[in-house]
Length: 188
Length: 188
DNA sequence: GTCTATACCCTGATAGAC
DNA sequence: GTCTATCAGGGTATAGAC
Image (cartoon, rainbow over all chains, first blue to last red; front, side, top):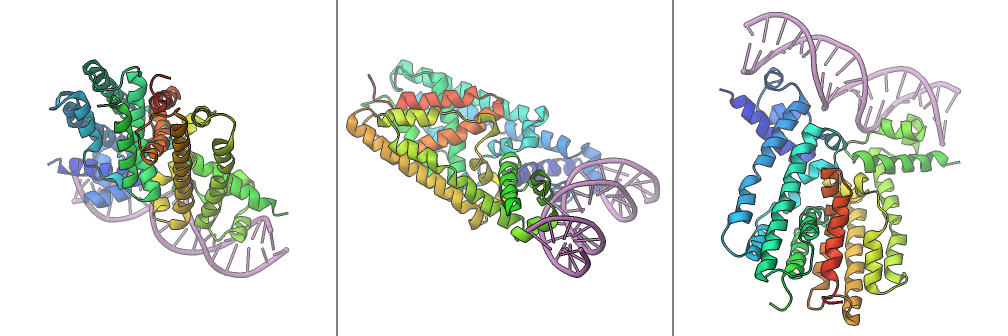
């Protein structure tokens, strides 16, 4: 019954990914959802409200990925590898990272907040993983896990950007393999 | 005399940086340039044409930075450090990397092309630098310079993204320092 | 080269009927 | 809950006068 609501959220998630916040119009959202004007403004107070809900929903969909990194099978380094090498829709870009280019998103706490939480949380998770790996000797010693965690997330985010510029997913892959080669303890 | 033309280009460069392609309107360009409608459409055939010229001009402004990396003072690693640590307007993001989130830019060869050239060229320059550094023993041996070069550019691009999400330039700095720690040969 | 007028569609929203 | 008006403004461009 409030199927319209969930279809609106889903089409907003898709359009934000494809077009960003500025490039996404209420009309386009309604059309893709197969829902009329009145319905949308019944469920949400406007574009911003709908976008905030859609972004929050998207960020919640990242939780399973975190769990796998934290508690998946394998050694810390293996879990990092699995996360970095997992299947991604590289040329479509990151569904949340891309939003942060948008001035309207960055200037609005309700829109930027959830993105910041995912990124900050990811850095925390990665830093923990690196520390674990250092203790077991798998990960290169003498590096700052927090710095390297920020670096790893940056490689993923920047990998999307560089791959899109060249229209070639291989650019992303190269960057990720570069990280893995550097993070492993030398001579293993 | 064709000062209007150069003012148009400059205001387009600024607006593309702040707002992206989709978010930049001809009207806004004209207002910021202090130029009327007719003038803009006299010098350029439309928004796309103007944006293509502005992007090309922006990418040309990257050349001095390359030269410093290639032929600046210091060892290869010192030149890499200088490039990575140089003053940047971090929270404003990368003036060309941000454009690549835009579907209309990616789908248009005239807009994406110059960006691709700068990125591909940068990776080439960085890879050369890394090879030099490996020969002199400054840079960690046993890594693939092309992969690590792609990784370094990704860290810069992703560093902007992550810093904007957190609204804190320190995130960028941490990522960059992470790279430098990993790239240097261990025990030096 | 630059100006003003004009045009048409899109954006983001409100109002009120059903 | 959803539909159909309706609206003021902006986006992007063309036309023709100056």
